View: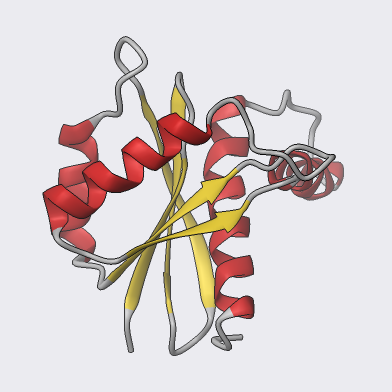
Length: 142
């Protein structure tokens, strides 16, 4: 079994999910808050130490017409920094529509209970789990 950690990178927040390749499952973990558009490296290091992953996956936003997102260069830098800091392989996975799907999953969960506003922090970590699920499916772990 191999532990994988996934990030839904953003300039304000970064959603995090953790999964394992044996079960092919992903679980939303947390949402880290960026500082001056910089990742929360202390929070990321804590997660890396706690989970000891062997693989990192980062969501890559692709525009509807298939072109690169304006965030592509920032995400590439984040991936390079992750690889340099933790010496682990970093894959990128298409994250198109993951935030929309995450918000819909939250709404469905809440339909049975009382109405609550969908928090962006919750959406980010669920989006990270969707990114990780997609990566596992593509790589034959599901």
